[in-house]
Amino acid sequence: MPLLSWGQNSFGADRAIDRLVEEFSKDFSQVIVPGNRIYVLQPEYNININSYISERVYDGLTSSVRSSKFNLVYQPFLRDHVIRKVYSSDSLFRIEHTSYLRAQHSSMRSVLDTMSSYGIDHFIASTIQWNEDNDLLVLNVYMVEASTLLVKWAKKFYSDPNYREDRTKTHLNISFQASQPFSSTVYRDYSTNSSTSLVGPYDDFSGYQSIQIEINQSYNHVWGAGFVFGGSSLFLPNGFKDTIVGLNSMNVPFFEIGASVFASVWPKKNSMSDYWLSVKQIGVIGKPTFVDTHLATETRVEVHLTPALSIFAGMKFFGPITRSTLQFSEGITLNTSALCYGAHISL
Image (cartoon, rainbow, N blue to C red; front, side, top):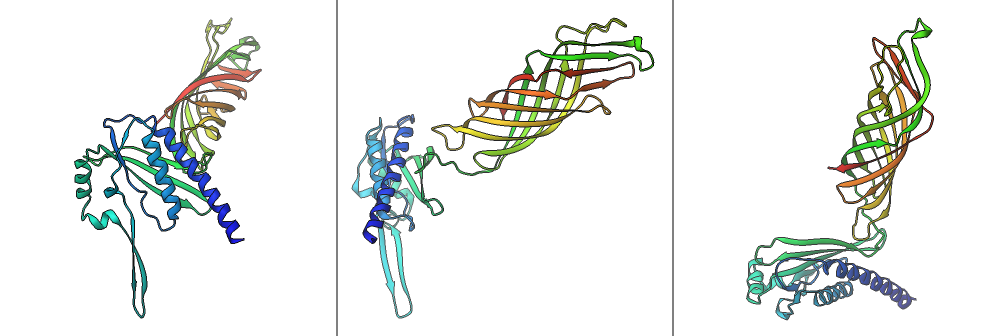
């Protein structure tokens, strides 16, 4: 039974290592930096990582670099090893793990001078971590310029390709939105004391446009919520048929404030935290004037083209909208939902 258990664990570790190396090889093949000769350091020693895993990952990294457009430099003198020293006495037993490079060189400068003597342009440094909660291996890889110690490329890889780190993130989005013309019922009333001063109500087409600011908080890699506020307006593209004073236009501007919840789906293959789509539900309160108030809801699907730019489309429904001024009161009641579309920029 112990042998069977060890075999199962080692088979699972092999599959996890293969996935790590495969993802690294795929990403590293697209790296473009000046310089050609690269040396791969041993993964940094971690007492929680079995030496078998460390060696397998090291072999995978060197094979990937050898298969790339870069020239792999092999120099056994620079290969790092773990040196174990045992200290014991009547009351103390201690094992100390040290690095061969650290033991042989008093400073990193000596190592860099040695690399320079072999014409090494960059070196690959890496660390391996193990998440005990889900048996997840995490590989951090850094491509460092040997002459300046500047990190030219860095990436994190997971043994589970579907894993996404749970991180709370805040995004500021500025969105621009418009709608297709939608059916509505409109009216204008110049006086509540005379029926002859009422224009309408009659059916017409209305349009919607807005500029919104969203402050979104991602609570994990899928779910999030936020606040929405901005300036919007409803208007009649074909004009308003005013038969009393001839004010043949209707534009109801208002301020919106509300909240949203969203879920992210369809993760991007080569990214650890980005998704292609988000489904968002928004509810807002509109204020055309200090007195007048209306409610609106929107169900939106967003497509994230880049981390900074997204496009979206959704269905928005307004409650009856009224605006009262000193001269008249007017109103718009939607007969159908409004098909809205737009784009937003993430800062």
